[in-house]
Amino acid sequence: MEPSWKQAGDGDLQFVFLEGGTGVGKSTLTYKLEKLGYRVVYEGFVDLCRQNPAYPPTSALLTLKWSSALLQHMERAADEHRAGKIKGGVVFFDRSFLTPAVYARGLPVADFMQQIMEELRGAYAVVPVLCEAEAYATQVRVQGRLFDSAPDEKDVRTSLGETDEGF
Image (cartoon, rainbow, N blue to C red; front, side):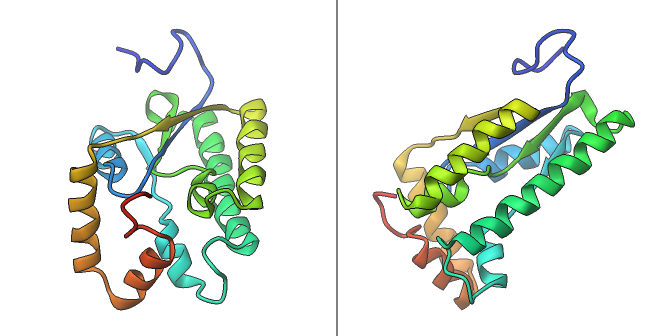
């Protein structure tokens, strides 16, 4: 049975980007997809921020590093797809190029990342999926992450606004 996001007979590689606030279940979903044998790319934005403390999380430099890494994953997957190594012709990402825009909350980087997503649609079959969850479930997940996090991770998550209930 073909996944619902793929057209029957479509031989193109599809990139499915899961996006949404922290704690809505993106990683849970991608772990399940990975267990089913699908290619999943995990790009931890919080980890990228932790590894690059000199760059503010909403900076253009960090956004450039983020988008470059995602694009490299896409290009490698396209090569592997041509070699027949991608199950179902679909690759899932647990975040998208829009992630820095989500965290930037309207800063100029948001417009740039939206432009990148539009340009990607011209080059690849790209499907962004907005994931949502009940507010209470999200709050419980975020609180758990903060409780279990190292101090530098807590600092990054706080600076990204993950502790803000409105986010």
